[in-house]
Length: 124
Image 1 (spheres, rainbow, N blue to C red):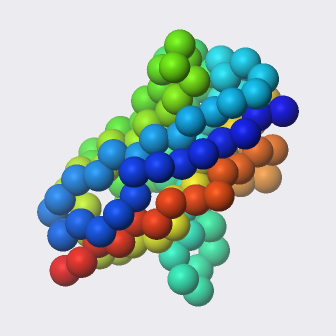
Image 2: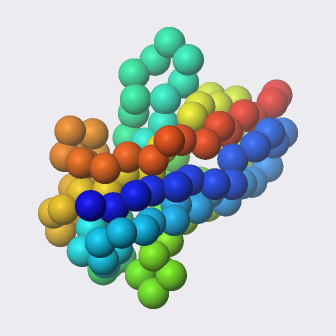
C-alpha cells in the first residue's frame, strides 16, 4: 500500500502560480504511476495530469495543457504539479492518486490510492 499527502494549495489571484506536492509513504514510490485530479463544487472529479513510473511519459487535460506541469522525484517519494497562469475555472480540490500500472492515464477508476486533497482557489 501507499499513503498520499497533498500540500501547497491556497488562494491566488488569476494569472498567478501555485505548486502542489504529493508526498508518498509506504511501498516503493517508483512502482506507482501517478496522477492529479480535481473536483469543483457540484461537479464530478476530473483528470488534470498523469505521469508514468519513471516520469518519462506524461499527459494533460486539454484545459490545463501549456499551463500546468506534472513531475516526480522518485528519490524523494514526491510528485509535483506546477500550475501557472491560473484561472478562476481552476478552483477546485486537487487530489493526487497512485496506480499500480506503468501508466494509468486519465481514468479515475484506474487509480487505487488517493490523498485527502488540497484546496486551490483562484480569485478573479
